Amino acid sequence: MLSKAKCQRMHTKTRMLQRYGIELNRRSYQEIANPIRDRGPGKAKDSRFVDRQSNRITRWFVKYSGRWFPVVYDSKRKTLVTILPEGSLGPEPKD
Image 1 (tube, helix red, strand yellow):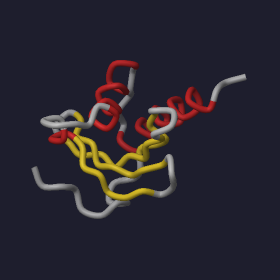
Image 2: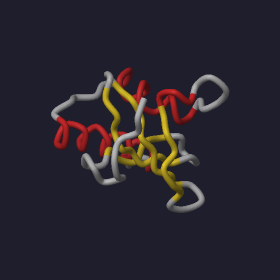
Image 3: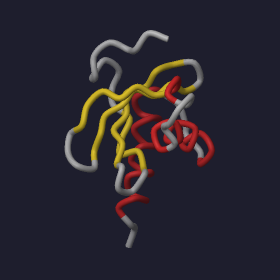
Image 4: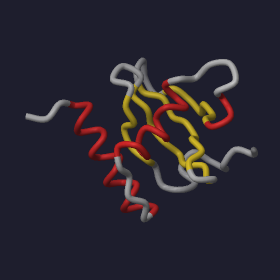
């Protein structure tokens, strides 16, 4: 049986391919998740907090390959839950 974290990672990779035509591997997945997980002084340039859905689920914009992607993040498991369709969190942040 797969863990919830593993299912979330698989779901995120599937949605990124379906919605944006980008195939994520382990390294590229971490490039998107790390700016949220490692947030701190000097590290906020690649991620923008949007809102909190629950105690463990937050929504963000994350910059990857020069483009902003709307994502949902699970802070308990430190995993991406999904990549949202373009425009679903409003306009992209300004650099």
